[in-house]
Length: 59
Image (cartoon, rainbow, N blue to C red; front, side, top):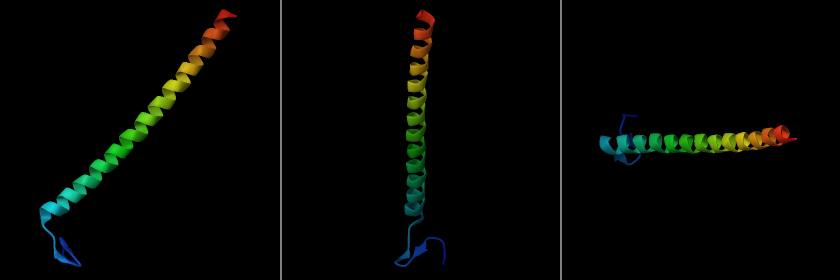
């Protein structure tokens, strides 16, 4: 099959590129959301550890 062709016939190159770029952006957004979630979990754990440390120190 020729690049830019599908079952309906030729597809404009700009549309193909736009779809590919959209897919890349969507993947990046998903990765950023996952990173933000991991960062939030790490901060929560750090806060818990900090509170535990403070409690041990004041005993």
